[in-house]
Image 1: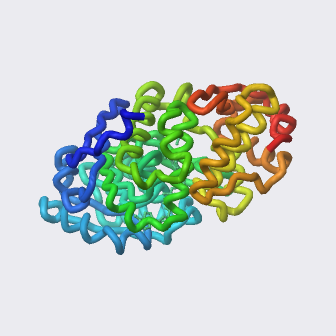
Image 2: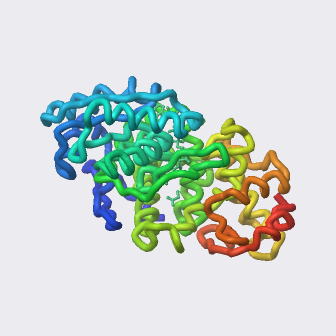
Length: 360
Ligand code: NAD
Ligand code: GLY
């Protein structure tokens, strides 16, 4: 715990990531006004397109634009309606057409300014436009700060399910300005807390203990650094998600099914929380998990106002899970919490899933 509760240094911290590409995640306060300077340390574009949604751009777009112009980079912006409903092929292709119409070249840059929807879609566009151009992530939601901006997974949703088209494509820089979270609505903050709680359950009981009573805002700076460091370790071990990185999917197999069945009315963070409680309950019933694990996870989520019970029956969820990209052949890897801070991958035949999920 002492390790987490140190007084945060005023200086921004650089957390280096070495994957197929090496880059830094810079975490600190009031960084946006210097975004251009940080970007030039990582890449040298002559032009940049800021991709953002219609809520985030009015808050932070001008600051980022001005900082890029100050460094001699010419800037365009492209915005889309906020929310998961926009994370689809139609929005992606509108963005690609915009990039082509404006003549962006391979030595230019995409700047993803926003939450996970913006980062996933802009990152995917960067990976396929001209067969790949550089991009940087500037996360502005807690979820994006602790998870989606780091590690290079990009995606859009297809009609059949979440994140079914995408790529592994690392950014050149992640610039996380914690002050942007000041404008994040409470409900969105809570969604990010589901992913923070996930990291605690995954491998960090001290982090879990720090946040389980609803007091995460007191330690935000340190919590973000801690989560990014955990993700860094897993991405560096297994960039392409064939082994240990799959642990980050704790709560996601059921969570993605809940999101899809709700028509994306249930947010990603809420759905991941529901998924974590459900898998812990089912794993306990199967003799794989400590008795108090699901209760502690549910209580931690509830302390941020997050839902904890699953609104869909096992049979409906299993129909969706069969189309999950994590399925291979007739089996799927489930992430099982054995105890808080101790998780494992558990391969299960898909025809056993419905019985396993009866104890949701
Ligand atoms: P989001 O991008 O839709 O942001 C949530 C809401 O918060 C939006 O309405 C947005 O406009 C608003 N917002 C963001 N920053 C704000 C700020 N500073 N002030 C005011 N409003 C702000 O969604 P999200 O919760 O950030 O991310 C969820 C997405 O991330 C999902 O699509 C999920 O699949 C994806 N995801 C990806 C990864 C990955 O590794 N690539 C990991 C986890 C989640
Ligand atoms: N959020 C899951 C991953 O990045 O692997």
